[in-house]
Amino acid sequence: MKVVMFVTNPFTSDPRVYAEAKSLVQADHRVTVIAWDTERQHPARQNWDGIDIVRVRTPLASRPGIVWLLWNRLNFYLWQWQAYRQALLLDREKRLDVIHCHDFDTLAIGTRLKSKLGLPLVYDAHEIYGYMVAENLPRWIPKILLWQEKRLVKKVDRIINVSEARKRYFESITDKPISVIMNCKPLQSLEYQPPNNEKFTVLYIGGLYQDRGVLMLVHAVKELPGVQCLIGGIGFPDYVQTLKEECSRTSNVSFLGRVPFDQVIPMTQRADCVFWMLNLGNFNNITGLGNKQFEAMVCGRPIICTKGTHSGEVTEQEEVGLAVEYSEQALKEAIIKLRDDPKLREKLGRNALKAAIAKYNWQKQEEKLLALYQSLQI
Image 1 (tube, rainbow, N blue to C red):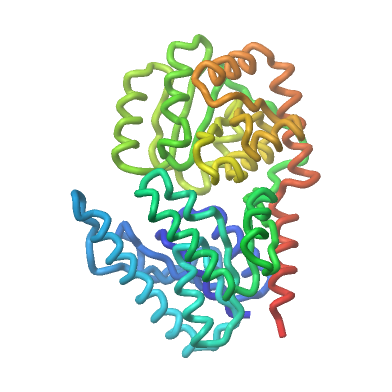
Image 2: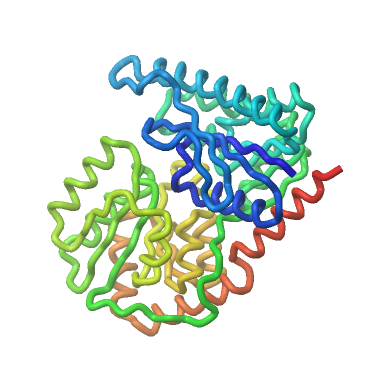
């Protein structure tokens, strides 16, 4: 089958999109990802491990200041139109078989394309989009986005979610078939391998946003003896700059910046524990299971996450880490507890790997993805 996917990033380091596209390619499907080159610096066409990539550049550069929202909204509509036209060109070259939209901000392209070409449409909801943007926009905008999603989801054929908690939300707004395909990672080893660090090493590599508590992590480990902390990733420029400055003033914290896609798992294997604490004020944070959870599992490393989230529930159920209150003091106590108890660290790490082998690995998620695509074949 010939599949076209849409994603609103340059598709240089999106682990979920890569994993799904790679699995489809290995199953003899042909996949083209139409991506938005917001950074305006990546190749227009590229093949990444058998995945064809078409990157669209909108003609308007990003603008700061008071007109930022309107300017970037116009840029977004231009991207949607160009991505839609690119898909039609692909269909003319060789007829498409499936449309696969990653996140709500690409769904309008998919519904329009489905109406034009009469193809099955897969909606891959990584987030509940309206709730995801709620902290950064006036309250009425997320409400409109949630309403739009509820309207557009009626036009899809299959829905993919990342967790059982988010599946329950979508079951409340649609009767479309829903598959839960988690952000699990490929197994690295079937045997537990302990880390070998002189200092207890806490790792976070991911999105750098205010609701992820990364600044809280910096403050929690500050001047903690026998502890070092490594922080990497990308995010909102202002927040990243604040974070970099805070790290530079903290002797046992290193700011890594952007970490190459293929270095995340090796760095996780070298760490003693993984940080993944999210603010409870966002419904997405409560219902999700992040990449960090599964990176820690396949590497056999304990995780520290927020009590009261779905991630916290899984962590406690599987006994793969510590779920604590979202506060600097609770985080600091969790780090000290793991630092001072090597036997507990090993127990939690072994449990994490055991859970990954039994359930939380990409091979099992891949089976569900391929079964979904099999159901689309006529």
